[in-house]
Amino acid sequence: MNKILQVKNISKTYNTLNGEIEALKDISIDINEGDFTAIIGSSGCGKSTLFNIIIGLENKDNGIIKKNDNLKIGYMLQEDALLPYLTIFENAMIGLKIQKKDNDENKKYVLNLLKEYGLIEFINKYPKELSGGMKQRVALIRTLATRPDLLLLDEPFSALDYQSRIKVADDVYNIIKKEKKTAIMITHDIGEAISLSQVIYVFSKRPAVVKKKYNIKLPNNINSIEKRKCPEFANYYEKIWSDLDETI
Amino acid sequence: MKQSEKQIAFLKNIKKEKRIILLFQISLTIIFFLSWEFLSSKGYINSFIYSSPSKIIITIKDLIITNNILKHVFTTVLECLIAFILGTSLGFGIAIIFYLFPITIKIFDPFLTILNSLPKVALGPIIIIMAGANPKSIILTALLTNIIVNISTIYNGFTNTDEVKIKLFKTFKASKRQMLHYLVIPSAYPTIITSLKLNISLTLIGLLPPVGEKIFFNKCYSRY
Ligand SMILES: Nc1ncnc2c1ncn2[C@@H]1O[C@H](COP(=O)(O)OP(=O)(O)OP(=O)(O)O)[C@@H](O)[C@H]1O
Ligand SMILES: [Mg+2]
Image 1 (cartoon, each protein chain N blue to C red):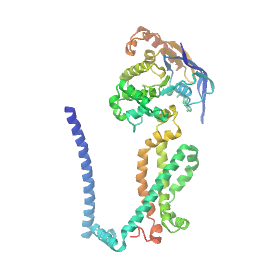
Image 2: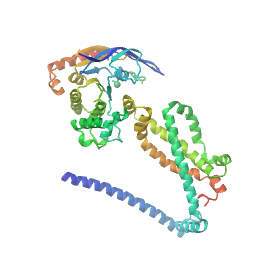
Image 3: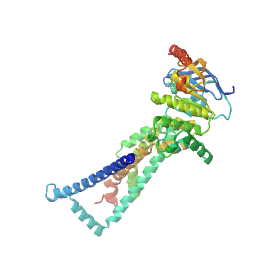
Image 4: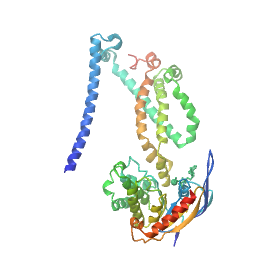
């Protein structure tokens, strides 16, 4: 399979007034085009740091990141971060506006996404009138609007309650699959990782190294809720649970 | 159908509340002036010291006829307006510079604190010596009283911008200008409005120094 991104032996140490913090030690991951990959690791182990390095918000100390020069990367944050003073449509367009690509064609594309994902009636409303799950969908559309080839999702559902979390996760997964995007998702939720991904990387505690890599083999013609009922699911769950247990 | 009735009731309620608020504000104002008038005309308070609304109206009428007070009021309002606009735009500009170049705020912070704690009105005589006995020094005094507060409230508004949103903008590779335009300034909007309100009263305080207007000029309202 075509590798869209290769991270090789990345290390990163933060310098702070209170001393050095070694966040990443020797991280290597490969991302296949079209895959949904999950990264699991304990809190503060360096997962967000890896994303920040991939997208260029932080410098790395060592290692290489191999990707196509024109690979476009989109980032979806833990919070929806919608701007309260803009309408839903303006919020969905903000990335394009910043990149000066808010032309008619792209406007149409965004309107289509909003329509497809049940938000068309809300385009002139403000974020405070939407539910948490809807806001999360707007945030995803805002990221999709710039037509990235690779999506980085940093705990995108952590602000939601458990019930809507499973539903919204399924929604977002389906949107990503339908738009044929490659995605890497950071999560604390083992079940979420297994039910959504094709590949899972388990990180050790800080400084992070890749502790295990799993290729998840579950039937892919069923939704994530049904996947949770497969016997293999429990198997993976147990294994990853014990991996994390050792790292804590 | 039922839903829309509820909606109508909801909107009606909001309107009703607005009316009640306005009603209270107007009646409070009327009650204030009426009781002032009553107390002073019945001699409960000394009308020589506290005056009374009717006397004020008579004086104003008098002043309009004999002293052309409107000209003086106009001058004061103009001075106030100039100092207000200058203070706001300068404060805004300086706050932006502080935000764009964080090292500048670190350098100037202690000086701003010192300046802010100075009794600016007391600087009146010095300013008159520096700028001369003309409206320039009045405006300068007024400006001095409002600008520091202006800078710091607006700057604080800027720095309170949500970190997550800043990160979002960075992921879109927003320039500093875009960051200010689409995120930092709109987010600080409520703070800026508060600052403007504060600014009006501070500007008026700055206009009032007796040393400024009363001694040197004929055109002003603090003269009376
Ligand atoms: N800008 C920074 N300056 C200094 N230290 C940092 C910075 N960003 C992160 N760190 C430190 O690096 C370590 C890894 O942080 P990171 O945010 O990557 O963790 P994480 O795995 O994403 O955690 P979580 O699951 O809680 O989000 C933490 O100990 C954190 O305190
Ligand atoms: Mg994180």
